[in-house]
Length: 466
Image (cartoon, rainbow, N blue to C red):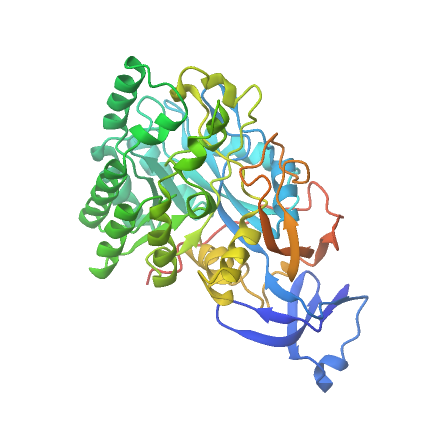
């Protein structure tokens, strides 16, 4: 059984910052001991990693990715192989991707298709949520079986009529089922019926550029859908997790629900924290690079999101990583913004961008680890195996240089996409070494991982619920 000692670093978890050495044995964290103590000095090891002047942090848990996702006649550009390799480069050691039920098909058929895509191809560990596109008596029964299999969260859409959309009645039935089986309902909260009217009107008036994608997906329609989702969950007695929250009014709806004591949670994403409608309005067709749903918002919404993260009104930062190349994919929407594939690349940069937020004073170091590692692990039933550095946890460990600077660019990133949403941005902090279950997958800037190392991780139910 191989033993590794990571010595000399500052160990940061959601709850603690301690100068400690970490003993890794057989793929797990075996022990922590204060640096320089007899206990730490007594450890023998096959490998010693010097973390002096570095942070030692848990591997990131990105609870919202879409590898190989079909959308609008094309597919997300990252496969499970390329996407998880990029995740590893960025210090993320677990992803939770979305298996998709097709209308008229079973949940099982959709889930098995995603198992087949991922099996043997992932560089880091993975789990699945299930997208419910067709709520009916049969799929409701299947939800119970999936929970027992470790697929404990189900995503529904108030957007995309004709594709993923569920009406309020179907949403209520799914929430009622989740209330009984312990599952967590994840909601894309935008009023898709109303948005489609605004899209039709914009195109008829000749407003076809990417910037209008943001214009028609109104803040009020995100807030209204968030409010409606909260009330449906309240009636059903079910917990609710609102994905990719982008706007101040939606944060207010989540905060109001939480202040009432309702089990309502929210995530946001780096693109809403660091980008804005200024990007959607970039000249020519450049704005297409930034088309995602919910859309980027005017810059003044960012402070509400940061405040929500500080106040725990929002608990998680995920990427909603769903990359489409500018050339040949985003370009499908030239002359009609509604045909631009919705999604942006980000799985590689989440940990670094959130460290930049620490440097900028938006959040503390421990909150960084909480929203990027511990809270997503707890939210989706992976804690304490994932999301922390503690005896018994998987040895998913990142040695992080907080003083290094790097320039984000499509030239140097590892995601399988031909542009960077953060092109030319300088950030402070950089991943140096990454372990996944005790195996070094990034070694001081060299990739040493392999497809097939990552394994499927069944999840328990949400750990924030009694």
